[in-house]
Amino acid sequence: MKITLTPLTLAKAEYMVGAHHDVFDFEKRFGNLNPFIEICDMNQIQANLALESRRKDFENALLYQSAVGAGCDVIITRDFKGFEHSLITIYSPEQFLEEQTHAT
Image (cartoon, rainbow, N blue to C red; front, side, top):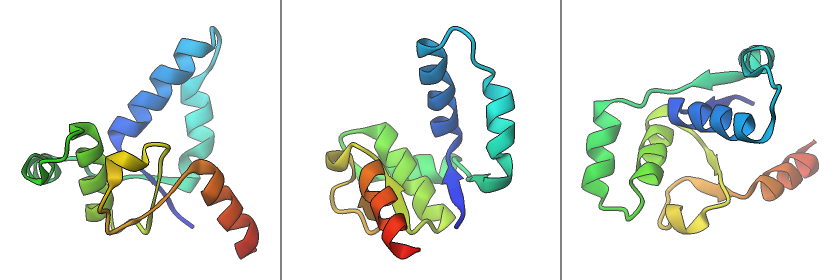
């Protein structure tokens, strides 16, 4: 299994973790995950497609177009409304973990 993140997702993760933890070595922790993840493109092509999609939430539109461009099979999110009409399967984190438990 390959875990794909957008640069935006990575930046948001660093911000959220830092906001809740005084001492957290994000670079070290991210470095430990590095062998298991891939950072996908988020470029002008995805931005243009996101703009053209007319989705209400531009951030979700960017994430979706990046996932499509990277060939992702699944998007893991708590924001199901932001990914209505997705051609990619949408899971909550809990659903994804349960799916993985049953797959092994």
